[in-house]
Figure 1 (cartoon, rainbow, N blue to C red):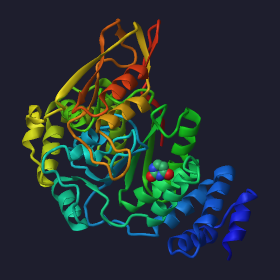
Figure 2: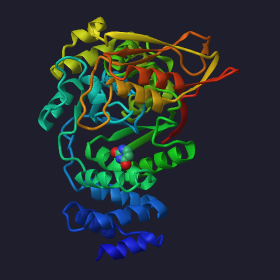
Figure 3: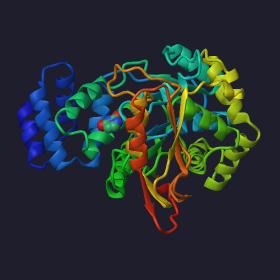
Figure 4: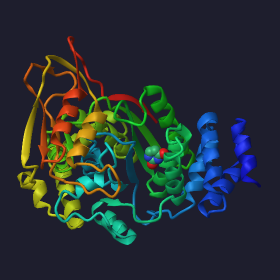
Length: 432
Ligand code: URA
């Protein structure tokens, strides 16, 4: 077999066999196939696409390039959730403890934030002492004991994907649906869960800017997971405004705690109940969505979700008193209220711009080596659908003095207005 023939076959729009895909991925991982041939291949896929079989074989070839986490020794269903990346997305901090408090194993390997999107690990690290680096054995032991662990990647998951993703990043081939689907699913399949819920974001702050491409991506990821015997759900959600009010690290943990205390933003709660409901159904604890949502709501009312978050923080070395006494979180020393210069109904809040503003003041990273300041961030006072008068507070910036002016301008410009009422819609579609 020769790489050039496989590239030519894909360039001409023909279907690749499993052997051909494995040959390319194995050769690329061990260095036999050079970057320039792989670049040509990814560009051919970008233009010609891949069918479900090819994308599944690509995901599996990348999965088999590294280690797989075996969670079979943990009794019961193991669930996981993945978001394609948004702004203000603290869903895992609420969803995981809520679901785990029902006795369902929530085994999550998370990532760090980059650019305008935040990362669950950075948010958790704003809790003093919280340790995201457990060994595989510690991860499994914790899951057996408390049904919940959120950690950074330990095992060498899908190294072929890591190498290929870096190449795509510099060859304008990131935004190819089969390449994104196989990349995400190679890592999700390697993490060992039986039931996976995907939150596919659509809108200005997301990879997928429109519903048609988001639907295609979601369907393909569900198909790949199903072919590998996983229970799959994909929820398409609107990212035309940040999720909830808070964008940053400590501010997002505070919002997650409020939500588990029953005082969360409507959109965040709705998303957690929806994603959670399918994981509860896949764990055979309910047969309908409304029954599953009722179970989850009860875990908020009786504080079991909050207690489970504290239990996880404790188990991973963090100071769980912050969960019960969130006033302990120290926020940025400059608290700046950003006022509206317009009046009308908020019609859109550019999530990308808000994420960027938060990054500028230090809540996110421009480069992977940048450090995060957990104290800073943005808290929106107005969301889509709210009426705003001139000079009313749109958002509050918590800062320690970095790039404040630029961030304030960005936040002001992120708001669009209309002179008619607007009903925001968060959940756009569900694919099972
Ligand atoms: N996230 C991934 O893990 N892979 C992609 O290709 C895009 C987003």
